[in-house]
Image (tube, rainbow, N blue to C red):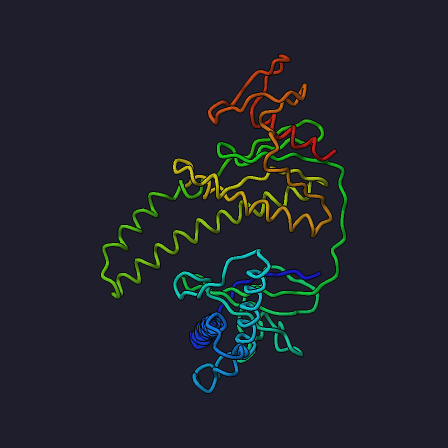
Length: 362
C-alpha cells in the first residue's frame, strides 16, 4: 500500500535557494516540453512531413546549462507529469495541459529514491543533490520510501511529502452505519442506524476572517508594483489565506477521520458544487464549505481502513421523500427548513434527508 506523509522542512538559506531553483527548473522544463508538444501537433496538422519525436529534458540541457544544477530526477518527473496530463486529455478525463505559472501554479518538484538517495537520519531527511535537511517528523512510519515531493507555499514555507510503500493497515470493523446530508446552515447532518441525529456546525472560516483579509487586500492594492512594501503586503495577505486554508484542512481531516473510525458504512449525498456556485448569492459560502474535499477525504480514508462509502445519486431526492411513509412530495424551497407530510409526520428538512440517505446503506 502506498501512503504519503507530509512534514515541514527547515532548510538553511543555501538549501532553500537550491530548492527554489530546482522548483523553477522543473516548471521551466515542463513548459518547454509542453511548448514542443504543441509545436509537433501544429506541424502534424499542417502536414509538414514526418512527425518528429517529442523532446526530452536531456535535449534541453546543452541549450540551458543551469538545468544541470537541478536534480535530474525532478526534470524527469516533470516530463512524466506532462505525459500523464496528455493521457488524461486523450482519455477524455481532463482538459488540454496548460503552461505552469510562477505565481499561480503549485511550486513543487518530485524526486525518486534510488538506493537510499532519500532517507531519514537523526531528525534530518536526505535529498538528492542537497544532502540532509532538517525537518519536523511529527509522526513516524514504517516502509520503503519510493519518492518525495518538495513544495513551497506562497509564504515561503517548505514541506516534503514522502511516498511510502508499507504493509496494509489492519482493519478494525465496526457495526455502525451513517447517512450524511451536507448543507450550509450546518456543515453536516448525520443520522446513524440507531436513529440518533447530530448536526455539525458550519465553521464559516472565510467569513470569520473576511474583514482582516479585505484589509490586507486593500493594503496590497495601494503599494507600488515591484516595491519592497508591496512584497511585505503580499506576504501578509498570503499568510491570511494560508491560515484559513489550514483551519479548513484541520476541520475536514478531524471530522472525516472521526466518521471513518465510528462507522463501517457511510452514505453521503453528491452535490454539484460547480453548478451550485452559479448562484452568486451562495457562491462564496459554497466555496468556503469545501464539500468536494470532504467527500474526497472520506473516500480515501474509507479505502485505507476497510470502510464502505456510498455516494448517493445526485438526483436522489433525499429532501423531498418522507422518511416515515416514503411518499415523494413537491420540491421545497431552500428557506423551508421544516415540513409536514400528508401522513402526518413532521420533519426537520436536513434530518429527514440524512435518514433517507442512511436507508441506502441497507
